[in-house]
Image 1 (cartoon, rainbow, N blue to C red):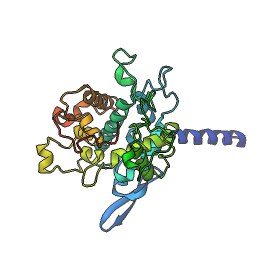
Image 2: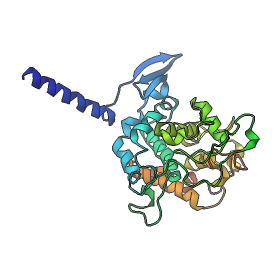
Image 3: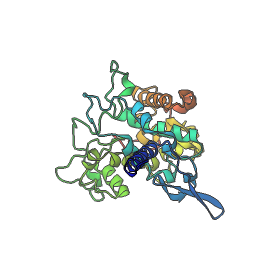
Image 4: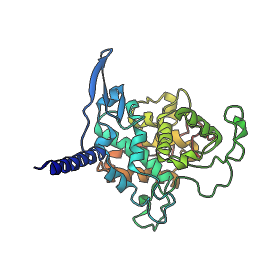
Length: 318
């Protein structure tokens, strides 16, 4: 082969290999060491902190760009409100900050797939513009929004004026993948992500990676000390107390709604808002090839009878 043709061939081969890696078809082997008798790993850009979780499969091993496209197939339709904003790359980049902590990497592959479906089920339901007769069905319209279109107020709570004072002229209406509302939520999330969201909440609607980071941080972080995160209740890290059992709170998807939304969704019986979130989760399990039968019985999926972890709406979203 002539040098010119050889160079062209090698360039094309390099491009194809890059595409394979980007689409998650080539798994990176973890580096392994033992710390205090326990095996820990790092695994490329996606799981770069030494952690036991990085010894497991990472999200791009089992959840690839075509699956993201299937889950959110209508997000770039002409009638959607955030065309061109959300993409797989933004999600996978954001998740890389949390995979060493167990996001999508706790336990076996099946648990990881279910957690990604559960998290995105919340995201899809909260950002959907689907309706009963929508093309493709109402569940195909997740990630239609990246912000509240017609906010009725600025969501400024002066109770937090010493810790998270409202910036004059700024509105703290819903933005993001798990929409943020209120000055204190923007302030707390901004502190965690080291981004000035209190003065610039608009950053969340301008950067899809940041929007996913904020949502995953909320998923991984308890609302209060001595309480579980949505991640904890889903993957089984949380062991219910006697009071939890009496309050009908149990590990599983139902309690993720309790952690994130409290009494706005849970303890309200078989409500439409709760069923909408559950439906998105089941739909995504099917599209990811897991199957909704893996979701568990209704009492695990539902929070219809659960008492809220934090009564009187101390939840993270509106």
